[in-house]
Structures are given as structure tokens and as C-alpha cells.
Image 1 (cartoon, rainbow, N blue to C red):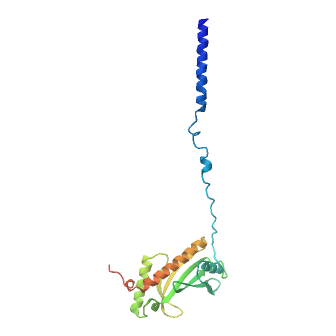
Image 2 (cartoon, rainbow, N blue to C red):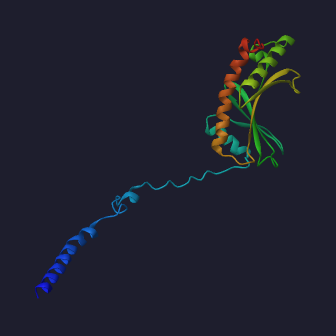
Length: 209
């Protein structure tokens, strides 16, 4: 009898201990449960992708409006089925934007910005020595600078030797208005630098080796 009472008392004691332990085990949280509940909801949503219209062709009127939108005057000075010239001014010089690869004067595939000036414009004469100086200066520019090339050629219209400064932008692979605007602004800055470069006598001779 006493043995049965002891066994029963022991069993009750074990159940009591188990009862006190169980809630503690149930209340114990896993590492994932201790993470802040609002962690995901507080994260900023990913921004929606911005859709930028891509151009593969450009019309003359689009080019005129683009030049005007960034502060340049523009007028169409010549047009035929394949090429359209748009005249503007940059850094005090006349610049022609030529749209090439056009289809009946529209839907042109690329463009070129180009200025030409006579040797006296840069403080040179038409003497052979100054022609050589202009050749040296344009070669030095093209060798050391990027984004626009310079060269000397004989004009078919006037028969004079002239200096040309040009850059190209391909539209047909796919481009944007912002990319074309950057090309125009960058060329305008370079045109001013180029004029100063050509007028500096130190750039008209080859440096000593």
C-alpha cells in the first residue's frame, strides 16, 4: 500500500514538473520568429523600370526641334532625297547638321555635325607654310582628342584650302533624344576649344621628340 502511494506520488510529481516545463518550451521562439515582423513590409519597393523611346530614324523636323529645344537656332538650308542640311551656329561659327541616309528626305539613318572655315579665320594666311601649319595643327588635334576629327581639304566650291571639324552620330542601330542632345552639346563645347587650339601658334609645329 505504501509502495503504491509512493509510486503514485512520484508520477504526480513528474507530471507536475512536465506541466511547468511545457509552457516554457512552447513559448520558446525560433531565430526566424525573433526577426522583426515588419522587416519585409518596411523595405522600399523596387522602382518601376523607365521606358525610354528608342529612335532608329530621324526626320528633319525632329532634328530642327531637337536643336531648338537645347537652345540653338536651326533652319533647313538644303534638302534632297538622301541628304538634308540644317544650319545652326555654335561657338560663333556656322555649323551644318547633315542628315544622311534619308528616304525621300525623311527617315534619315545618321547625322553629322560639321563646320568649315578658311585659314585666315584661324589667323593663318594662304601661303604654303601656313597650309603646312594648319595640317600639323589638325593632325595634332585628331591624334590627342576624341569625339571630333579635324582635317584640311580643298573646297570644291571656292577652290580654297579650308579646315573642317566634324563628328558623327549613328541613329539606325538605335539611339535616344538624350544621346543625340549630348552629341550636339559636346560638339559645341569642342568646337570652341578647337578654334582656340588652331589659333595657338604652339600647336602649329610638331613637338620636339
